[in-house]
Image (tube, helix red, strand yellow):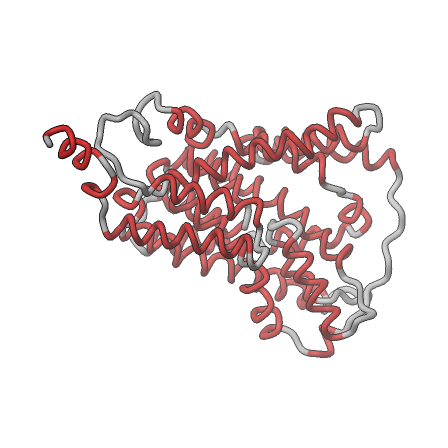
Length: 374
């Protein structure tokens, strides 16, 4: 009987709390959204199951939890807390990304820059809500809609908020098809949504090879704090474009990034233990994250409308929403919105220009914030 009682005391039932139940429900919702709704399943399914793992309670000292030194989960979680996984994700992302759409429409880079307004507006909003500068900077980066960048910056500036920031960033990335359409429709007229844009001119192979080299040198001088992210991003893109390292590029964009995504998603989910995650600060972060994402989307759309006052060749302002770096989901939303108004209007390639520019922009913004507050 004593052995049985001891078993009960160290098991899940004796340590289970209402907070654990709440987080288990959240984990199931994440899995449901990934499987049934197809919202970023490669992210939400690992994170959702990780939330389940992280919220099955146990007695302290069993050396199995993510916050217990030298447990399997804690070792894997070091890739998040020490910022290893985000640059590796960027390597695979660079090997998958075609920057020719951006090079063909260089003026659309401005839309990717405009969408980063969400980062800095949220930064000031976080300060007004009582966060210190470092925490506010880490929270603000959620507005870039770039999960790896958010994890990288929060691991450096606000490790105690890392779980809430990571889950918030990935949640809103997954909900791009839900959040962005009403904002786009609110800020544009039917006439604007019907604007057709001319197809792009082909981009030479030489320019595609030179771009990652030149872009890395320029951006790293502007924001040295982004070297880890942009260095891996542009290196992966060089592997893709140079034509002589196809094996390396193929590995980076398939098996390699898949492995890192599994480890990152699962460990981020495991970090959401209810006792550490369900706090007033977490609730504030989710509110700020939602507002930052909306502001970033609106900033891109409004800036596209302003550009139409200057340029003779009109821009469909729908594509301004793709300035957030949720690649390629925001570009798909823009295509969907344009096709809904006119099935012959193809915006996907135009939208990819600010979309990939947004990836670079959010990484540069993270580098600036890291240099300022790190």
